[in-house]
Image 1 (cartoon, rainbow over the protein chains, first blue to last red):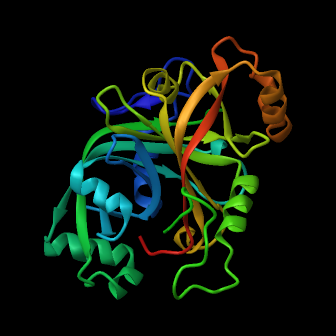
Image 2 (spheres, helix red, strand yellow):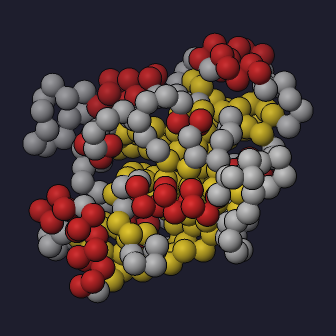
Length: 151
Length: 151
């Protein structure tokens, strides 16, 4: 695991010198549109669900969540979350790089965030204005890139 | 979301009467071999990573984890976890059913668990005996089936 939270990531010992974890993390962030969202249940236990994600201009993940969903109710109580961005497709998912983000979500009514999200997820326009839906922006804490691993 | 934690799930109002959430949950549990694992960081915040899963005879998920991984260190401190089992493949992952499991993991040296896990994940035999690896069995708390949703 390459921790890129505290500055630009660099290739570690034994790694391919051409391996650029910063660029790889950016690629994952810009190409993956559905992530696992981990929130905290009322008792503080983790709770993993699936969600679509958007991306703010500075790379902060954007969410469009219904208040009816358990993960949204979790975020209303404790806004800390983690997102796992992993490539789908064929083959062993563990053989592909993936990104763990940690951070804190905040509800937003910012029109720019709304249009950025809907540009990336146009189908969401169908329900974005339903009264139980709102946009959230994730203030990033840590970014952890897993290049390849068995577990 | 269909909560199947408190007894056999049944079709809800407006659902296809042929929809069998119990059978669907079982299918997901028996076919999906890689899941998102949500654990708790030292500060209690959620942390989402990817892991291979096995299955005990009674449907309890099995994990083979390295002590070097952050999620394992998390489980050693607080054994509560959540697993998201979602179908990969083509198309929109949100259009497919997925399963959120919550529970508590416990390390085990049970030889039967080891063979069950390795039968399902034969490649793991390459590293299962490395000193930093051990098997964990998840005592299930809740099972939440999401049939189809937009968020």
